[in-house]
Image (tube, rainbow, N blue to C red):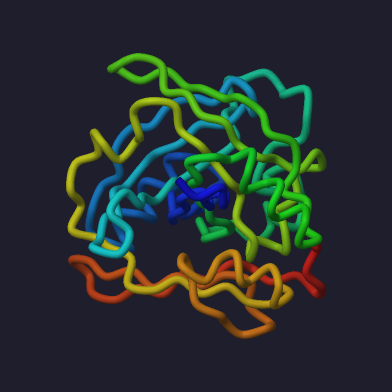
Amino acid sequence: MSDEAVAPAIALDHLVVACRSLDAGRAWCEATFGVAPAPGGRHALMGTHNLLLALASARFPKAYLELIAIDPEAPAPAQRRWFDLDDASLQAAIAEPRLVHWVARSDDIDATVAALRSAGHDPGRIVAAERMTPRGMLRWRIALPGDGRRPSAGAMPLWIQWSGEHPSDVLPASGVAIESLQVGGIATELAAHLRHLAEAGEPSSPLRAVLVGPRGRVALTAPAPARFRA
């Protein structure tokens, strides 16, 4: 047996669309894709809640879309919420729901985070999270920057490792799939870690996804600040 370390298996996990409210997210999803999202749940750790839409394709068999918003019934969390949801400029940018980030899956998040740090990028601290579903508790570990910022304005993903069931295992087929995913404005040595997940995009655009469904081809783009945050 070879002593060479085996690299973790990585894949696109989900796209994140931020919303002012889940009602706004549901209406946007139906108008944009012609499909209603499925119920998600509440994130006690972050004071948010979500809706989900399957995006499975041959290239991304477990991918899904997450519509996420601050939960008005939840107490404020001890730390800043993920995906820049506490940022006033992000809230202004999502007057209509908008793609803001993406999440990549690893079967060994500790090794993936260590490799990224060696390449000069700190994905953040790995924390445990969970939410209740009708089938029981869904659990995962995720790397989160302490300030709640999206790494490289959303070009660099958050990294996740699921424990047991994956959300896509029970999502109904939607007829919507990811055709392409592009990231831009990140250093070449970091982009190399993502080459199996996304193509290189324009330097001025952190994240762009093209989805195909009942309403045809839909391009989603993340808001680009004046300068990406590394």
